[in-house]
Structure formats: C-alpha cells, structure tokens
Image (cartoon, rainbow, N blue to C red; front, side, top):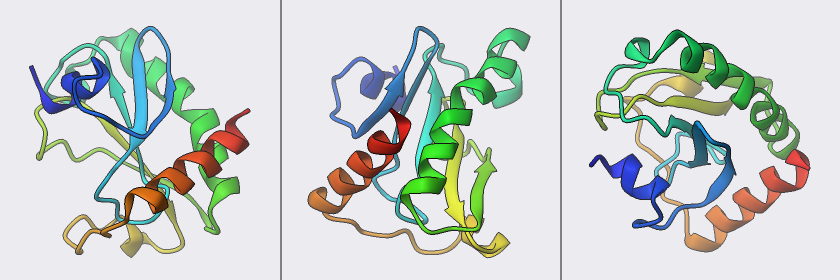
Length: 130
C-alpha cells in the first residue's frame, strides 16, 4: 500500500480538498508554493500514463474546479500542472499556483508551512470550491 493509498484510506491525516469515487485531492504538505495540491487516483497505479483511458481523461475534469479555486484563493498568474511521479509510486497530478515556469521547478527547496498555514490554505481553496 502506497503512502497515497494510506492517505486516501484515512490512515495518514491530510488536508483534504475534494474526493469522488475515483480521485482524492489534498494539499502537498511540502509544497512548492502555498496552495500546491495533489490529485491522486484511488486506483494504485505507479505511472500516470498507465491509468486507464477513462481515469486519465477524468482526472483533468476532476482537477478543473480545484484549479479554478486555487487560482482564486492565491495570487498567481495561473495554476500550473505537473506530473513527475518519482517520489511516490502512485500516479498523481500536481496543481501549483504559478507566476513563472520556475515556480514548477521541483529541484527547488520546498516550503515548510505550519499546520495553521496548511489549514488556512485548505480553507481558502474550499471557500472558492463551493
């Protein structure tokens, strides 16, 4: 069972943003920028492009309102998308509020936000997701 499957199952706490029968969205606790959210399929699949065609197309539809909420909640030029998939062997999509392409540079040091800052980011996104 991957780290993400444990988060989906509630075995590891998370800052949940949204969930449906196929996907789970939550804040990255080591974000590139405040509001950085992960979209994870509930199906444990290592590589993003190994998802079924249905899940692969539906992940963007699930992410669309979340991306719009992030864009409203945090000052940014847009919400960038990234699929890296090297740290956790469970397919996932990163949604990151960005102003420049460098804001999606995963080699940069990650932010260290407090629980209160993460909770505030979660509440800001949820407010705009309604």
